[in-house]
Image (cartoon, rainbow, N blue to C red; front, side, top):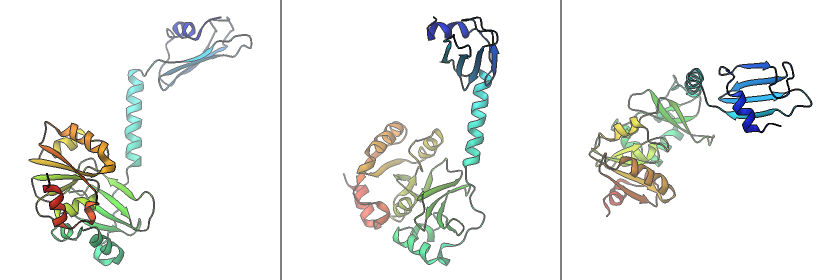
Length: 259
């Protein structure tokens, strides 16, 4: 009886394209066309259908060049399919009391009035949308308690920045970025995710200084961000108790200027 390792070593010499299957004479029991072979997602699978033969197993052989290309193409295609386009029909928030109240309650009014950010209402999805600076993407907050609470649209691979200061403050979400901008001293920056991409690092390097301002529950995330940014931009960390989007400008300034 051959071990799984011995079987895989013998069968590795058989050429199979990515996604190909074939039946061959079993080299272990000599059963004619009894051994089924397939190469699926980088894994070689084999099984002999002769009742007296125990040849069967799986071996991770990895993707060939064509398989890698196909996999990357599939991932890109799925990514495109999953991306929601920015809604074509949007409305001004002041025409919808619930949305207008949300803007005030989350200290976004200053940023909206000063045109530091574009905020719109999506009537079809019942969401308040915060648009990226180039207008090609947005994040939308549900106004009716639907899940997920936040939803991304279009291209949000950059950073959502609100303000004109060269001191950027990295915060958890778009409303917090608007609240930071209301200080007139800082630019609020939301990275819209947990991982910092190369493109986002490039954008953050445009600031003269950065402060990572997250709550105590996000300490691990803050430490990871700090490691990514150290050596690129002078960066400090502030942990907060109260969510910045519910703070007045003087409260935010006090937190950010504290030692």
